[in-house]
Image 1 (cartoon, helix red, strand yellow):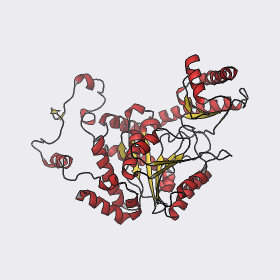
Image 2 (cartoon, helix red, strand yellow):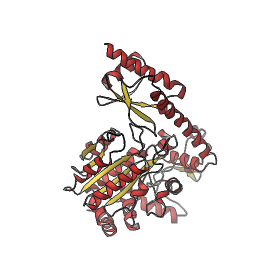
Image 3 (cartoon, helix red, strand yellow):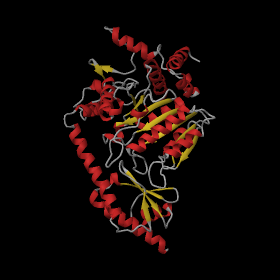
Image 4 (cartoon, one colour):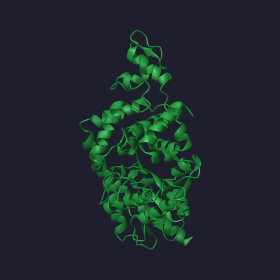
Length: 433
């Protein structure tokens, strides 16, 4: 093992030995080189005032070399904020601004010890960093049965973890915190579990209420008290899109520093929060009472970034930072929120109107995010999906035998009734066939 990795491991052990036990083999071996091209280049940038022949970009006229056909499209921004490499951890000001945003939007973080957000290439990259640092073959990764399918690739296929699911909902259609608890307690022999908490949930668009959120935290805390080391990952991809009574902040705040055996990790980003999906700007943030441990986890995270993508894209970080600082940002974001809420409310009003009855479908609770799911009673989801796309020109997502996911986020409010009329018509077609 490289001595630099060993030093980071000792810092983590000193800060919290349970967190060291959570690390995968890769997590223990990875490090960000203190002595290497990047560190030598940084030293030269600070001290080489005559010539700096270290950095791997081309320069011209005192700034990054660039093409006019590109710069003319981006002339609102200085070349220095577009063309050079961003630091592996991301633009420092962007990290600071995002941390301030987290504190404003998550009051339960007040007084908690957590690190500076590290920029990732959107949220999937952040989740893959978690998988690399903490998931070992055979480790349990626990999440609900209604989930984003990429978890399987990220944790199962890439890292050979064991995927453990539990029913998302109880019979009363509330969050199944007891199912989560039982899944965690079943890992006592292993002594470790990675928990994925995705709210608003993809695919159902469900966010628990405050009491349900407290029950989730209590389940994780009980598992920790019974000897399970828990990496609690808040996948906050759709954060902020809370349309009804529910949690209005991430569980990261309540999980931060809740127990020595719980490492809270927040994965979030501008991708969906600020409607810039293609910009690929996300963040990963760790919570710990030990600043040395946080620093060591940051260095290991930078090691993963350096070894995979080297650093995230600079232009999109600049664009996001500029937007977050813009005077009109909050007003424009609220305007889009109202559009999204209007669509969600329209869907619920349609489904509750009695127009379609409840013999062909019911729907899972939804109060947030981009999606909702129908539970089909009389036809198979995949058969219906195929029928709708080929006979009605309507695209939906089939999940398992009974569930059909509909993204109201990409359908204008005035078209939603027509959409559900077509789904209903498609079901009736298949029933007659």
